[in-house]
Length: 236
Image (cartoon, rainbow, N blue to C red; front, side, top):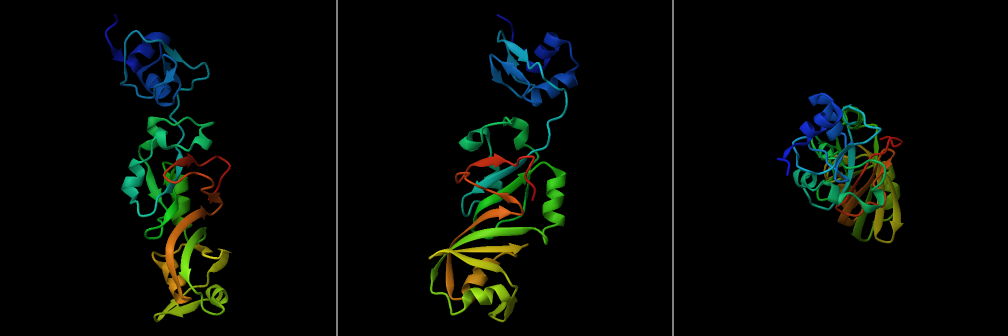
């Protein structure tokens, strides 16, 4: 029986690459151990069969952006800790393979409204992070808000043209009924608590808030507590 050694060392012996190339091959998901992708260079192997994909490239993995359908009230740190291959949405288990490195060096962006659920963005890509921060005032966000109570007369019109609530001027907002107890709001760079203020100003009480879209990116049918990757075709 062979004494266990690091996977990176075994790969060097197998294909004659450098240590850095071995690490890049492994971290990029190009190496299998007994048919299973292993992306940790320090993983110990003995007599298992180690193979390098014929299309392997010794390049650093592309930065990823993760779209999580976060449950209401979950804080950002807990949400980030929930990200793993196990919580990837079943409907989105195609194309990109989840790697250990995809869950490292992530930054949360575009904060949710207090106690809201829905789309939360985590990214390794500085271009995505810059877009969501520098252009926050230009990017429209869409929320579905469950409410109770009776809206005041001409409430939608008042929301769409701006109004005053408790001495504070509220900006105009796109608002429409989705059904008898759900409103849709679309706005740019919403400040914390603004949706609750909109609702209170027209006689409604918020029951729940869910963000469904940021710019051109929607959470879609991702189940609560699960996530998917941002595709190359999607733009915030």
